[in-house]
Length: 207
Image 1 (cartoon, rainbow, N blue to C red):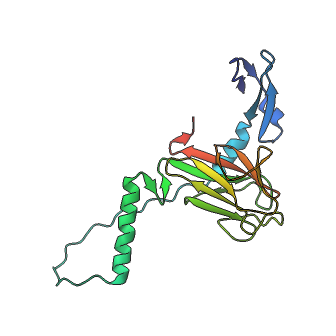
Image 2: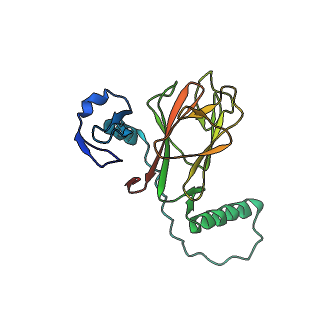
Image 3: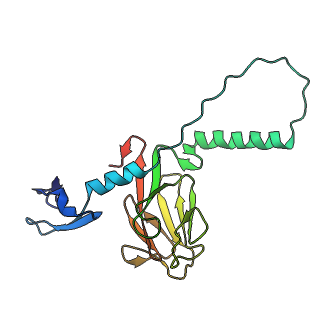
């Protein structure tokens, strides 16, 4: 593979086998001495294959002509169903699907812990991470019952917040306090479980 230094744009040949299965390696440019990180392309390709495809959108059934019946007041269940449809139409008009921005796919790769080497697609705007319950279950004794929350905003940004966990949440070696923004391929740790956020456009990877 060809490695390009982001500082001086120097290009160097590198044998992918030297990654030895790790997600990424740090390199020092021999020309400008800039230190930068390079992702293992085989690791990213394996994560992409593990990510489940988005569920198919069901086709609308054709409306059959029926004999006009006397008008009746809609029941409570009918009103609730109509409200849900109105909400779905509103989200669609706002560029959202199930509360998520359209045109993107969000996934979480488990790098360590009981669920290591698996990928979960994030299908709603708020994702709770916890030890035994929540949307992402770690089965990690170092993780609190309600450990952290991931929020996906309508503009496509992803935010992480620690929920007052016992052992804390860290990213890039720093504790998470308040809400912080996560970027594509950024790693974070809850207890002894490490995750990587993956953000993809509908037509492929982000630029």
